[in-house]
Figure 1 (cartoon, rainbow, N blue to C red):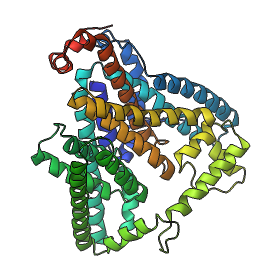
Figure 2 (figure 1 turned 60 degrees about the vertical axis):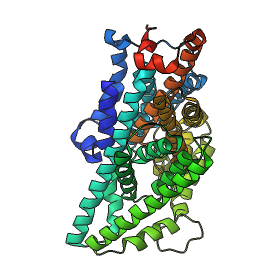
Figure 3 (figure 1 turned 180 degrees about the vertical axis):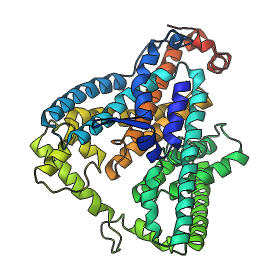
Figure 4 (figure 1 turned 30 degrees about the vertical axis):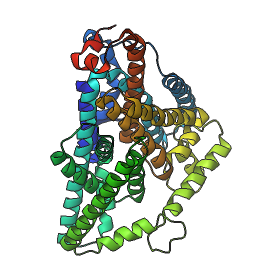
Length: 448
C-alpha cells in the first residue's frame, strides 16, 4: 500500500520538468526517471515475505485481465523486435521512449492488481486516488496563477498557459469531481458537505486551468456519465443535483475568467469561447480547429498501418518521417498510433482493459456490497470512459504518466471485482454478512 501511495502521489503532484529533468539520469539515449524506477522495480516487492500478509487468495481471475496481459506480451515482443530491427542512431531515442511508454501499462496493471490485498483496503485506495486528484487540481491552479501573474507583469497572450500547463500531470481534478457527484447522487457516504463543496470547486478550477479543449470536453463527458448513468435509480435526484453541479461549475468558471481577465488585462472569456468553438468542424474562428490538428495525425497513422498492418514497431513514426513522409503531430491519437506501432494485438490489449474497466467498474459501482467498493467501481468506470474518449482526441495514455494511471486503475478495478466474486462464493453462501466481514477484517482470513 505504501508503494501505491508514493507513486500515485508523485505522479499526480510533481511538475513534469522535475520528473524528467531533475529526478532522472541519462545513460546514452536511455533516460530513467523516478517514476520509471518505482514502476519497473515494483514487481520485486511481490517477492518479499511481508507481501503475502493478510492477502486474500481469489478463486477467479477476470478473463479480461488474462487476455489483456497475454496480448500485451505478444504485442510488446513484436513491436520491440521490429522496432529494434528498424532502429538507427536518429530514431533510437524515440523508439526506446515508445517502448517504455507501452510497457508501463501492463506492469502498472499487474502492480495495481497486486496492491489491493483485500476488500477492506478499498477505503485507503479511494482516499489516495481522491487526494491525488485534488493535488493535481491544486497544481493546475497554482500553475494558472503563476502564469497569470507573469502575463500581468510582462504582457502577452493568455494562450501562453497552454505551454506552462504541460508541467501539470495527474487527472487535474477529474476523479475527485466524479467521486463527489456520484456520492451525492447515490447517497454514498464519502465526504462531509462542508468539505465536499470546496473540493468540487477546486476540481472544476483545476480543469479550467488546463487549457486543452479535449480535456475540457472529456471532463464534461465523464462528469455527466458519473452523474446521470452510473447510478441506475433516483432520476429526479440525478436531474436536480446534476443541474446544480453544472450550474455551480459554470459559476466557478465565470468567476475565474473575471479574476484572470482583471489580473492579466486579457479577454480570457473570448479566448475560451474561441477554443470551444474550434471543436466543431465548421467553426469560422482564427483558432486552429481541433479537427485540423487531429485528422492529419490519424491519416498518418493509417498510412503507417497500410504499409505495416501488423504494426511497424516502436519508433515507426520517426522512421516514416525520416523516409520523407509528411510529419503531422505523431501519436496525437492514441487509438490509431497504438495500432501503427504495436499492431492489432496492442490495439486489442488496450481495448480490453479500457472497455473492461468501464464494464467491470460499472458493475462494482451499482452492485458493490459497501460504500468503498462502489466508489472503487466509480473510479474504474469513470477512468475507463475518460481513457476511451481522450484516446480519440489527444496524446494521453501513450505518454508515461497517463499510462501509469491507466494501468494502476485498471488493475485495481479487476482485482476488486475478483475479490467481490470470491467473497460471494466463499463467505456469503455460508450466511456471513458482508458489512461485518469488511469492518472486522475477517475477510482477510484466507491468506496465501
